[in-house]
Length: 151
Image (cartoon, rainbow, N blue to C red; front, top):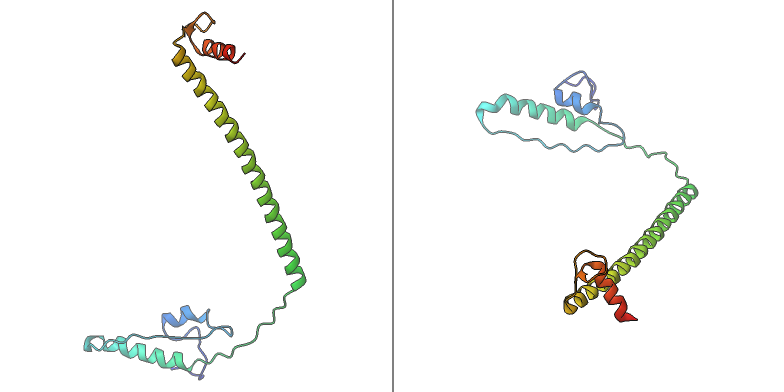
């Protein structure tokens, strides 16, 4: 049913041909697989599939070499710029990590100091509940006792 051998026309034939027409060009290779049914009830579908297979097999595509030119100097410059940006980002992130590690060490030291003070308060058995340094066991009294022992 193709009038011109080797040409795939957009307007004629099946819906599949209309769909594929836009994608068949000089930069493609065509591979088509067809499934046929041996059942007598599917004879018209099988016949249509075989006709389409014959027509698809007649399509000739001549590959054409692309004429793209690459400016390698510009490409290398862009890649070097990108590498430099990434190195700067890595350096910044490493600095951030170092700062966070310092903060973590400071907090660890503060926690250990507070744990020591709490242990000292429990062992000394003091009790200033008002926090005014009169011995009722609040944090101010613990720190005062701890600091007095350090002197």
